[in-house]
Image (cartoon, rainbow, N blue to C red; front, side, top):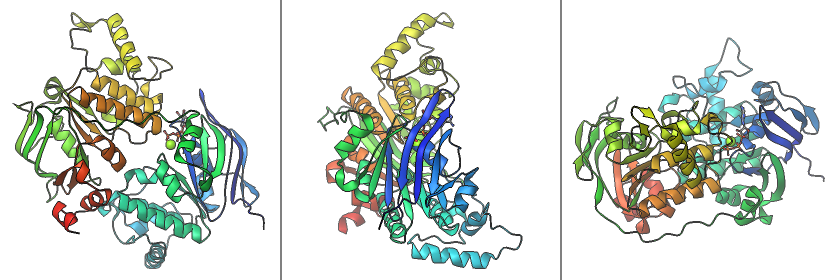
Length: 509
Ligand SMILES: Nc1ncnc2c1ncn2[C@@H]1O[C@H](COP(=O)(O)OP(=O)(O)OP(=O)(O)O)[C@@H](O)[C@H]1O
Ligand SMILES: [Mg+2]
C-alpha cells in the first residue's frame, strides 16, 4: 500500500515586505505520525504553519489535503478541513468555562446550545486522550499546562485531524511535557497527524517519527528519526557544526552580593505573592530559580530590581539596604535586569539599536556632553557593544522590533551587561531562542559570573539550569521550596517540587 500524505505543501512561498519567510518550501505529513519542524530563529517555521492553519495566505505554492487541493481564507476554513493550530499564546477567554471557550467562535454555534451535552462530549474526549480537562472549570483557574490542554481538546472537539503545536513545551514542567507527549501519541495511534515545532533536540529524538528542517526559509531535508542524530540535525539547521558548548568550571566564589531575608510580598487575593523568602547569592555564583508560572517567579525578580514593593523583610545588595528602592537606585547599585518580555520592559520596540543601547548609559560621563549626548561617542560605544556581543543588524536605526528573537536578546544583554554589573537578574533569557543564540546567551552569563558578578537565573529550561547553575531553588505558591546544590539535584526531584512537594518529601521518596 502506498503511504500517501495527509497534508502536502508544495512550493510554498511567503513574502513579507523585505523578507521571504518561506522560499519554495515542500512539506508533507502522514496520518499517524508526529512530525517535528525544526529550524533556527527566523527560518520560517511559524510562518509555514500559519499558512497551513489559514492565518496567512501564501504568496505562491499549493496545499493538498488527502490529495485534493485546498485553499484557506482564514483559520475557520482550515479547522473545517480538519487542521487546527495551538499557538504559543493561547487564545482563551479567562472568565468563561472550558466548555464555553470551546464552542466560542465555533462554526456549529447556534442560538440554542446544549451546554450539558457539550460538556459531556468534552469530558469524554478529555478522558479518552488523557487530557484531564474539567469542562466546567473557569479558564482563569487553570495553570498554563491546563490551558494548553484546553486548546488541544478544543481542536479535537472541532474535529482536527492535523494538530499543529508551536513550541508547546516551552511553558511546561518535565512531567507535563511527558504527559503531553503521551497524549500526542494517543492521537497518532488513532490516525491523527501531529506537527510539533520545537527548538529542543532531545524532544525530537524522543517523540518524533520524522523531522523536517528549515534553513533561511527553505526546506533542507525530511528524514526519519532513526536516520538522524542531534548533531546532524544541528548541522542541517545551521549549515555548520554546533557551537562548542561551555564546560562547567569551578569559579571563584566571593562575598555575598544579594541577601534576601524573610521577604514577603502581598498578593491581591488571600495568598501572598512571595512568602518568607530567604535567598543569598555570592559573587561568582549562578543561582537558578524554577517554578510553574504564577508561583512568584516574576515577583521575585521584580522586588529585587525595584519594580515591586515588599511588605516586610530585608533585601541587601553588597551589604546595603536595597528594599523598596526605585529602579534607578537599583541600577546605580550595579544591578542588571534581563526581563522576560524583551519588547515590553526590555527594549523599546520602535527605536533603533543605538538608541536602545544608550538608554541606560545616557547619564554616564562617557557619553554626555553637558546635558546633551555626544552622538559620535555614543555611536562608537554602541558599535563596540554590537561587535562584542555579536548582534547582527541590517541598520542601526531600524526599529528593533524587526530583529529576530535571538538578535533582540543579544542586544538586550549587550546593554545590560556592558557596565560590569555586580548582580544580574535574568528571567528566561533563552526563551524561544535557537541553539546557537541560546549558547551565546549562556556564554555571556557565565562570563559575567567569571568576572565576579552574582547571577540569579530564573528559567523554565531545566537543562539550562543544570548546565549553568551552582544552586537551584524552586518556587511554589510564593514559597522557596528548598535551595539545593546542583550536584545533589535531579530533574525528577525538581519537577516534583515545582508541583508542591517539599525538599524533604522528595528526598524521602
Ligand atoms: N507578520 C510578519 N511581517 C513581517 N515579517 C514577518 C512576519 N512574520 C514573520 N516575519 C519574518 O519572517 C521570517 C520568518 O519568521 P518566522 O516567525 O516564521 O520564523 P520561525 O522559524 O518561527 O522563528 P522562531 O524560532 O524565532 O519562532 C523572519 O525573518 C520574520 O522576521
Ligand atoms: Mg516561530
